[in-house]
Length: 334
Ligand code: SF4
Image (cartoon, rainbow, N blue to C red; front, side, top):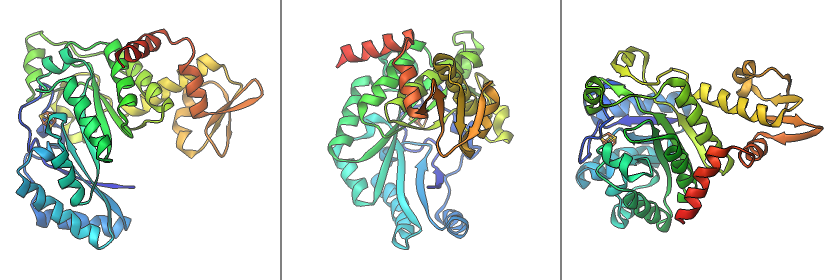
């Protein structure tokens, strides 16, 4: 389902995270007024018929309740007329409690996207997140107990981060009960605090090949265990790319990650043939295999057909040592 995204730049945030600079990525420092939003919604209704409305870019549950109501009442006009089939909000773990969730449910919010970034306390501290892993655990428990569907957002390459912590975080997302995950590598954005650390030599971003490698392993962990990865890499409109000071940015970062993961699976399983659907067409160039259009994406391995998810599960349960170590760390924790 298509999403009508409404950006409330850093509204409701109780602090400024080290990497964040919404102005650099959305170009819009202003809060949209309701008449502008009506115009947008009418365009969406005309071209799509139905859509979801998402309030992104800030901490929705950190806003004053009157302001939350203003936006939710506006969105509910479109729920009532059948155009809007779901309302999403984004928030952070320390701004979630039972009362806030019941309030959102009473106003037809159906999905919560929660930025957690890492399951490592040192990374959270050095990224000025202002919350701990315990806060993430509490928030996920509340969301599960109140039966509110949710997705988590992870980042790699933050200060004090490393690959093992990233893979461990991916396993923790699986355990959390999240339905979806977004992953993006840390970029140094123009007016972020991180840009000062970068200028002073205190922070060094990941190289792009490294970022692709780590993200593809994380996607493997998540997808093979049923968490839908709905975004890989930060979306930045081309006219705002000038705001990226440094870091592993590529406009097709997500595709590069998917190609890397497919190459890893192919190199492990050594299939004879790949079956593809129109969705995978752009990935096929990357592997030197016999290809055939099929009803489902998968591989022919020694005479048996393996669907993509099964192939992925087989690869992940094979000898991928760094992934194994992270999984053990996660099992020991629980
Ligand atoms: S990352 Fe999220 S919580 Fe942190 S400042 Fe940006 S919008 Fe606010």
